[in-house]
Image (cartoon, rainbow, N blue to C red; front, side):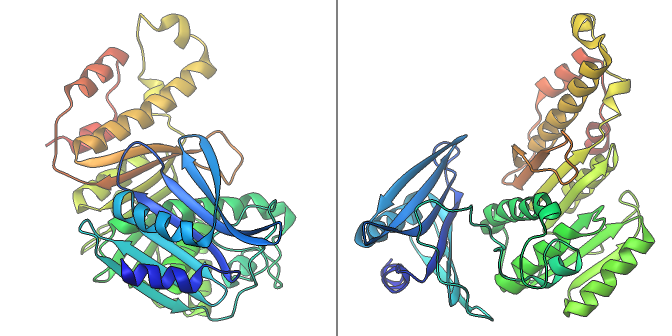
Length: 379
């Protein structure tokens, strides 16, 4: 850990923009820690925001205290630390035996000095005030880097999505080219953001493929990728169910794939052995037409209630089927671009082998449903 302490001694000053600890080693306890410098009564301190369930706890540290706290967290609690200064982007990966890997990358343009005020706006991964070319062309930012007021929800959604990517990055094998598939990419706000963050900011060797049925949208995305020189960002027109990868797939992303399109994407991801799956399902109609239960009849007789129950059951069973396939699954809240209640994100990381859960079949039988994903994944 001497290497880590040397880096912290060097970087814990007013030029620090933020530090993020992620990749929690334990299921319980603190999930993520974000740290930023603040000035309090003329003294430079570092404020840590600890995410514990739905709570966010705040603590202030002096530099010497923080060095020890960060070293302990990387030994015991977290697998990754991301540090951004005005001059550098530093990534630290911590192994189980205390060994660490450090990657340092100079920022192309020196960033702004850190805001040391105690009360300030939320710090995003893609900072407001720094123009990001694809966000400008997609109408989210002005050429000066100011977020367009009418597009602020999209700006927040993009950054929220990148936080999910940041959390699962320690699970990816960074010793080779990684392949990421984005099914139903649409206008590709998040596809471009994912490529920009992982390739341009983090320096990872990745290939990203966006797939969508709308040929005119795919054509526009291809033009933008060529304009930015994103050589390993490819867009294809096609259908999820019939797409074949022809090689290793490390991460599958499917956002707002309608109804059973999400099931076909999840089935493909499992059969490719994808290490990470990020899915935001949409329009879960399949089980709404199937679900019936004499016990629940007093509840399901109301159309709106039945629709919402069916949607939640659909995603819960999807999560269960993924767990059967050896994935550790979380169902998380996601900020939706279209301002609808469809804001559940299924995040799955492959951790082990298959294990049958008889309770899933019993639950489906009780509700009178036979979900497509369960049928697709049957041996």
